[in-house]
Amino acid sequence: MKTLYLDCGMGAAGDMLTAALLELFPDPEAMVAELNGLGVPGVRYQRETVEKCGIQGTHIHVFVGDTEEGEHHHHDHHHDHPHSGMEEIDHWISHIQASEAVKENIRAVYNRIAQAESLVHGVTIQDIHFHEVGTLDALADVTAVCYLLDRLGNPAVYASPVHVGSGHVYCAHGILPVPAPATAELLKGVPIYGGQIQGELCTPTGAALLKQFVVEFGNMPMMVPQAVGYGMGKKDFAMANCLRALLGETKGGGDSIVELSCNLDDMTGEDIGFATEQLLSAGALDVFTTPISMKKNRPGVLLTVLCRENQREEMVGLLFRHTTTLGIRETPHRRYCLTRRAEQADTPFGRVTCKRSEGYGVTRCKPEYDDLARLARENGVSIAQVRETVARK
Image 1 (cartoon, rainbow, N blue to C red):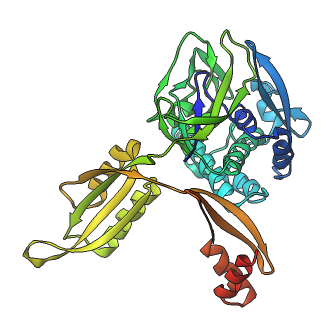
Image 2 (cartoon, rainbow, N blue to C red):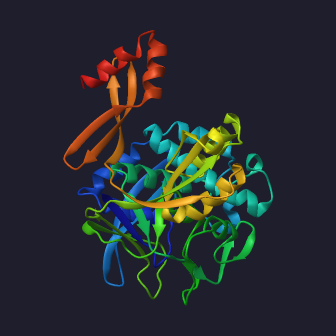
Image 3 (cartoon, rainbow, N blue to C red):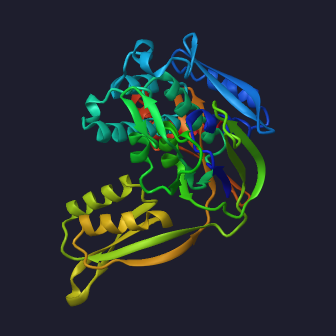
């Protein structure tokens, strides 16, 4: 299974993640050209090779208009960028030239940031005005990371515990403790630590990206690395200010998942449907029901949830909250997966997203149903006709 391990011993920021991922490609410059072709409004990416503490790595410069990200000072921040709300960010995301799957990830990361900001400032998500976070440089970082992970074939992402730094940080609201409140909110459930180094090592953007993609925080899994990338931060510290990414294969053995199940005989179909939605939206790998016959020959439903080991507690809580069950069973499983990635295919009827699955000597490509249905409706043809044009590709 294709696996990516992120060493966050010097924290995580969007630009460091972008730079580390770029180094995993055989031709990083070509990837920078692809990023520049995504059409993030007013944004230009530029790569530079730098050395910190004797290690050579990549630093990514993000230019918004004519200024570089981070050039404007905190106190005159509001002159540089109009504050943007979620609506404007949604509008920007919809115009990015990337697959729907990538855009969905960009939106999801932004929703995480918006939720953290709204909790910290005590306003609704609709009323949130991003400060540092919502400006185009952060959008550039989020877009780059989501796009590059997709181009790497969506590896399973693991990460070390996150070093957050210590001391204080200057922001649009004044002087705040490290980690900044929005970052602290985003890092709930993540193992973090501070240390001797004064400064903000993990930014809200870095935290939101880790939360979105990392399946487990801890030691490096047993893997065979094929590429190593060093993403350099802006500041210099006594330790090399870099984020290291290792891309490789975890050999055989699949990964471990947990099956949680319970028998239900006193819930309506509607309520079970609602419970299923809650579990799926919280990130369960799969949720399904099986009709069963219970004692006294009562018809019942077996509700089964598949999740990752680090989601177990959350899923158990949701099962108790949204169902009438009094007990839940757990079974560990090993799972073997093909690696999946989304690709675009152009047909005479329009563009279709295809899911490509590979591994164990097998390659498959399946067009996205929603795309087929949309093109069939728009062109007044059958789904089979659209599917056929994709198959010919």
